[in-house]
Amino acid sequence: MASITIPAIVIRRSDYGDYDRMVTLFSPDMGRVDAIARGCRRPKSPLVNAVEPFTSGEFQLFSLRDRFTLEQCQVSDSYYELRADYDRLCHGVYWLRLLDTSILPDTPMPELFIVTLRALAHLNYGELPPELVTLAFESHLMRLSGLSPRMDACAICQRPIDGDARFDSQLGGAVCLNCLSEAPHISNGARRILMKLPRTQFDKFQLLSQRPEWPEAARLLRSHVNLRLHMDKFAPPLYEETDGR
Ligand SMILES: [Zn+2]
Image (cartoon, rainbow, N blue to C red; front, side, top):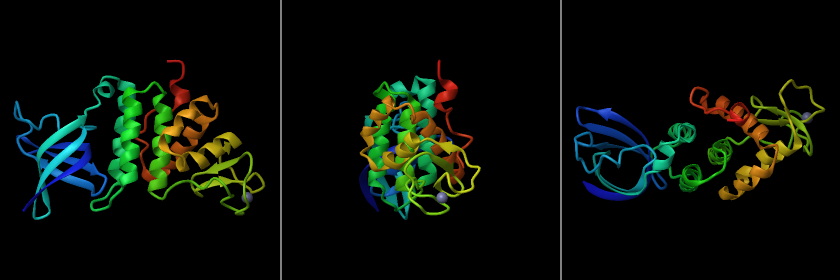
């Protein structure tokens, strides 16, 4: 029997019994942690806010025989603005789904945790298009999961690429224009965004808002994410489709 306190974000919750909920937490040092929040559906439960998706804070857990019970939570952010904006909320919910498929128990992912907190801060408090924040989040998540597309060399002939190319999700990255391919075209600018973005400090993605190629990069990366993680059903619309709203 032991009590531990860990920083975490709630990525999912489900009803459990009459008054309880099961919450899935993302902890930087423990990865995925499932915990029972007893009585949190009773009126006036002190845990009522602690079990909402997106809530981040310090979670006190009681562990007994590999099972965790949520005892208390010191909430550091609830991301209320996000919940009131349907468009942004769709992006946030999609990220939680991506995390749900990417994190594993007993598998620390401290950098992904920081990226998630930074991305949520931009989505909740920032002015940038949510599609751009999602591009940055997907890009870093794919790198940290070892699934980044390769953009600097041809997936067929292996020669270095320095210019326009094609983007073949099946083959895992760029294909040069000399090789036979029916994959969609990718401009040099979009190719360079996909090459550099995951290797750059997360907050630098803001600079991309000035670059006309970012929606193209977002569209092509989305096809890659869908193929690898099967997220088609949950993915929010791309920028082109919602432009002019
Ligand atoms: Zn080639």
